[in-house]
Length: 328
Picture 1 (tube, rainbow, N blue to C red):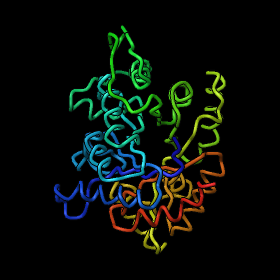
Picture 2: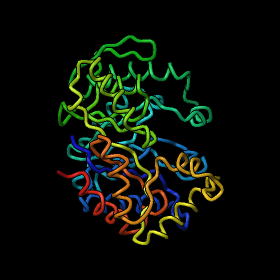
Picture 3: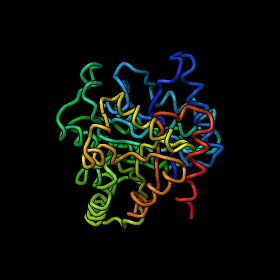
Picture 4: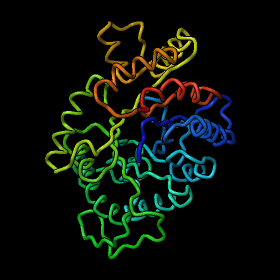
């Protein structure tokens, strides 16, 4: 697999608020990304909207149903969650879901997976949350089931969290369906990425990237993994417009809607609050991503455009600006 430029769709609150228009608007974005040469389209695996983007009761779609729809509407892009919350599904079900997605998409599925973290969803919807340690132990046990099932093996596991008995997963198009792990945890997340994944998506502040890559190299060495065989990308929040002042106004308005007033902050506070955000014209954003992410050693980018990605032409504009950064 190779995801040098991915487009994540985390937001389904579109102008007009008509539920019947949500999926067509998502499809339009995915098709635009496909036509623009983006490597992957990714959606969140959540049931409520996340605090940094909106309110819990704002629209959120179930990830694998949506990816199945996008599989039939696109031709080239890889399709993945960023990332599946392991706590939401039995691992045998998840292996079957992503394998079915691979069949529906003619071999374009990627299994994105992480430990799960959004406590409100678990509390209100009845999923077991447990402790931080519980969730990572569950993820490790789940991967010991899912990965063999993706490879055509029949795992038997009697673990603390899951039980399988010669679990089958048929049919499959291939035995090398890639695994993507997302997160920023230097000990556990990076260890599981070194052990199981083809791709690690870093979810962290841009200023932390050098430290994260150093930790990743250490985990790869501990696992006997050649670090160069593990592709990396960075999740970036992009606010882009041909008019840079319009982009900056859009950025301020969005943050103000989330209770963050940049104009009331000191320079240090403003820098900390925007460490994952890249704002301006296409050229300005490309320069920021080159300097703050790619020049620090990350292979690729996954961007979302929460404020205006739904506007026709915006995804194409983004791809035109950013593809030259990540293509050899």
